[in-house]
Amino acid sequence: MPTVVLMDVSLSMTRPVSLDGIEEFQRKNLAVHGLNMLFEHMASNYRLEFTSLMAFSSLWELLVPFTRDYNALQVVLVTDGSLGIGKGSLRHSLQTLKQRGDDKKFPLPFPFPTKLFIMCIANAEELQMTDAMDNLEELLCLSGGDGQIFTMEGPLCMKSVQTMFGKLIDLVYSPFHAVLHCGNLSSDVQVFPRPEPVVMDEEVEPMPRTVSTDLEIVGFIEIADIASPPVISRHLVLPIAVNKDVDEVGTGTTDELEEEPSASQMAGKSPNFCVLLHGSLKVEGMVALVQLGPEWYGMLYSQADSKKKSNLMMSLFDPGPEPLPWLGKISHLGPISEAADNPYGEDDSKSPFPVQPQVKRSYAQNVTVWIKASGLQTDVQKILRNARKLPDKTQTFYKELNRLRKAALAFGFWELLKGVADLLERECTMLPDSAHPDAAFQLSHAAQQLKLASTGDSQYAAFDHNIVPMHTDFSS
Image (cartoon, rainbow, N blue to C red; front, side, top):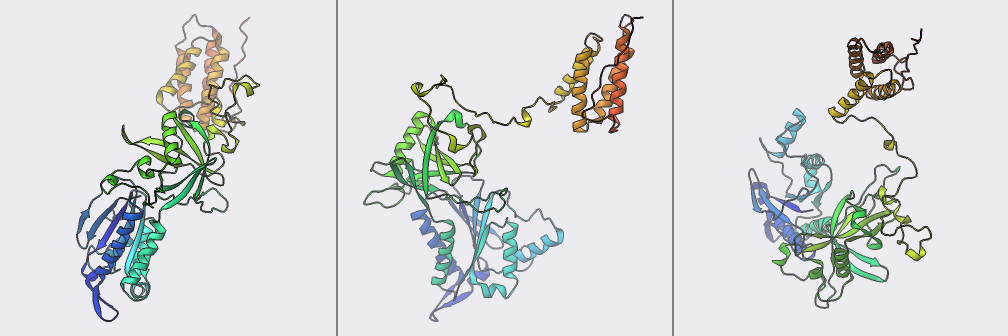
C-alpha cells in the first residue's frame, strides 16, 4: 500500500544534539537523514511504492502529493515525541477525546485500512520521563493498533537513526522475492505489494499464515469457470531481471516507472517463464491456480490497464482446502478427460462447474421470501383468487394459506395474519347469492384460525399445525 510520510517541523525538532562531543546537529537533521535513507531504499528496492511527504506543526503543508488515488495507506510519522501545549496539541486533543468520548474533529481512526508507524527522534527513556510514550501508544491504538512505535537506541546520532529506520525498512519495505514453479519451468519473481500474514478467526488456535517463497502452479482453469471469486488481496507479479549487468527488478528509467512496467519490460532481454505465462494466460483467456502454502491457494491472471498494457496479477483466496465452493476442493481437481479416456460419454466441451454439493443446502428448499412488497402482495392475491373459487379450489386455497401462515409465523409477522383474516371475512360478506354454502363456512373457518394464530398462542401458532378444511354436509 502507498505511504504517507508526516514530518514534524515544530520548534521542538530544532533542539540540538551533540554528536561525538564535537559537532552539534538539530533533531530535524537526524529525521532528514533517516528519511533520506528510507527514500533511497525505496528508489532502489521498492520502486513501485507511491509516497507522499507532508510537513506539519501547528499548520500543515503538502510538499509532495500522490500521483494516484488509493483507499489504503501506510502512515510514517517522524517526530521527537513532544506533545505540545494548548489547544490543538496532541495532549489536548487526546484529553478532549477522553472527556467527550467521541470527537468528530479528531482524524483517527481513518475511514480506510491503514498502518501507523511512529519514528521517534528520541530514546525510550526520554519519552518515558513524561507521558509522551503513553500518549503515542494511545494514538497508535486509536488508529486501529496496526503499526509500531520505533525509538532510537543509545545516543542520538546518525548511526542510531540509521538503525531505527533500518528496522522499519526490514519490517515494511523489504521486497518479497519468490520462485514461481510450473512443472520443470521456474522464474524468480517479486510480488508487490508484499503479502501480509493472514489470521483465520474461526480456527481454534489462530496462527498467522504467510505466503511461501515457493509458488507452485497446480493447474489452469477457464476464466468463465473461476468467475469473480472473493479474494483478500491483489498483487503484481514481476519477473526479476537476470541480466549480468542488471541485478534488480526492472530495467526502466525513472520516467518509465511513473506507470507500472509490464512483465516483458521487467524481464530484460533474457527468456523468462513469467513473460511466457503472462502472454499465454492473456491469449487463452485462462487463469492459473497457484498454491501459496499448505491448503492455501490463489490465482494468476492477466489484467489490462489499457489497450496496450497489461500486467500479471496474483489474487489470494481465503486459506482453506475449498476457498471457492463451486470448484469443490482444489486438491480434487484434475486434468480434463480426453474423449478416448471418457468411458461415461460425457461432453468434454461442457464445463464441469459448478460442482454440486453432496448435502442439500438449506437455502435450496422452497421457502417463502418477501424481499419486496410486490412478492407479499402476489401471495395474498393468490389466496383471494382461490377463495373466490371455493369449494372447487379448496385444496389449493388451504395449501397457499398454510404457506403464508408458516412464513408469517417464522418472521413474527402477526399483523399479516390478522390482515388476511380480515380480508377473508370481507370476501365472505361479498359472496353472491348463487355461491355454494360451503364457501362461506370455509372462509369463516380460515379467518378464525388465522386470528387465533395471530395471538401468538402456542396452541395455534405452532409450525406443524396446519389449517385443514372444515367438513360440511349439504346433501340433505
